[in-house]
Image 1: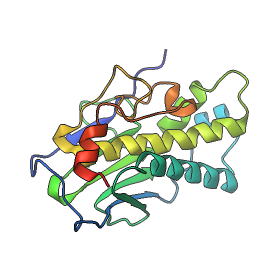
Image 2: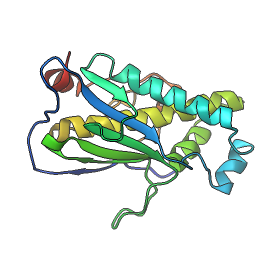
Image 3: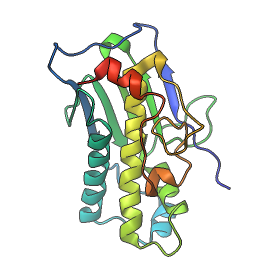
Image 4: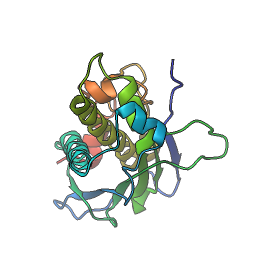
Length: 208
């Protein structure tokens, strides 16, 4: 059984609520891929059956962005590629090892309250998990789609922490929720996810 890959969240106490838009104007959530983000370790390339082609990397990015858009669709949040957005998540090849957290991580965030927040998604962990949880006999195309969903959903989870800050709380009772505390589950890549315990908090803070 693969080890659980926890999501790392660092919260500040600068503010108890987030602001960042004039009334009626959407908040901004920046999401983009760093150069080289889709460069995979040799072991992962072997599991995938070969390196990602440019069109496959584009497909993964499109699916990940669509997943975020779907999760934020009922909120007053505009998804953008702006690296100076109020909340932002960048996709990188791998997240650095943090003191006291030796396991590889799929995502991390820093909530800055009134100043927004920033976070990241590590591709290497997401790809490995998407391969591990792929249904028996799944085609490469289906696994690529699972990778895209996985990246997008980790990003959604990081935005959840940034938006709610200290109010953010995992819901480990519902593996089909965005609030679930680990991406180590099949639903992250091949199922449908939904908001659960955080929905009312998100609507109150950034609802349309």
